[in-house]
Length: 133
Image (tube, rainbow, N blue to C red; front, side, top):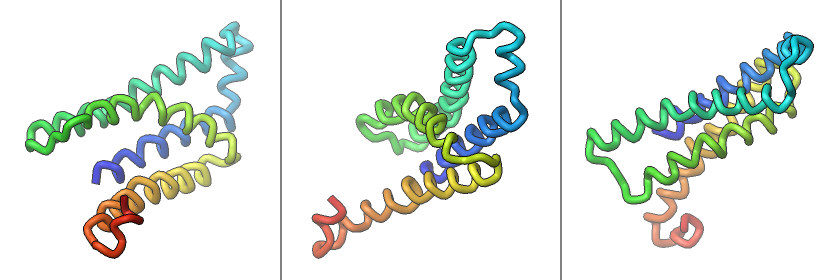
């Protein structure tokens, strides 16, 4: 269930990226004197910080309900720095905000919400154990 919630993070993020591109907000800031590296670094830093909010909530809830697994914190701490550049790169595949949000949600939902539990269940059937492993 965590992966379904985490699929919404890049969906919202790609919406903001495409809206900025459609409204030419980057151009307005560059004309005002902002440098291009400062623009991208500040946006990436802010998006990484915003992506850590659900991660911290998930880790706190896991600790509160004693569902904490060894090494879980490493994966969750590496998730935002990996997700934000991936979302920025995949945003160039789209030209409209709505299309980008729907496709991003579908992609992340398929990977995290369906394929991960499928691999988990395949490991419990003796005939499909090797496919799940």
